[in-house]
Image (cartoon, rainbow over all chains, first blue to last red; front, side):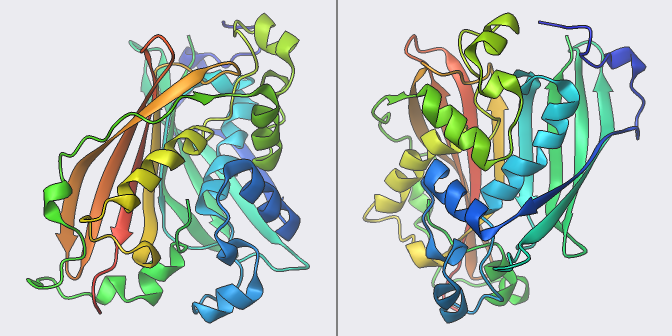
Length: 144
Length: 172
């Protein structure tokens, strides 16, 4: 259902930034996501296990980074049900410091417009510790 | 599902793998095309949707408040876009449990993930997932397995397809 605050497809331009958001993942947040998702791989909350398998530290779940990144688009849309397709490649891990956590920066730009389908493709640039952590992160949204 | 992080791709020498390797392909190629039995129905609980929403910083009222969801045109609160992974998880467990798959759990890294929705998941949905192995490609000593889980509601209507590409590391 379209509301007065739903973005208008015909007002969008390719390359337009529709969201620019920063998030912070904490160790507590990793435990919370483990419980919510059912992914209890200990590399996401135990330093000793992460070290034993040769990782630089405890890592955020890739699916957590993916889940957080799309929220920038949801907040712009005002409706989580308008996401019709969302895909990413996991290109680099996000190390989460026990005290500082990890910052995730998301910039969302209009990548393509499909007026016939009433849809836009939004391309995400997702960085942490100065590097890109999700590749080819694309969200198709319905603006009908 | 439990998998090593993507960092392992480089740490384990993924980029340095030889281009051709005839022996020790880590996944049984006969898995390609296999379709698994549907999973037991998963009942999407309202509190589970709220719990998952909090975990991924989904603060929209439509994720939490039934009245807000109904006024936006939904039957109940809407799950975040990546929630389908909770339902998909049991299908990937089916894949890893295949005795002749040759997939060593500790050698898997998550390469890609995608969700394609026909409609959003809402609280109260009873979802059943059917796994298909759509592609197995060999890249050096590694195999890339693409597994698609088609998730339908209690009426059999498609809700979402969750697709994962898993990189399975072969012998170094």
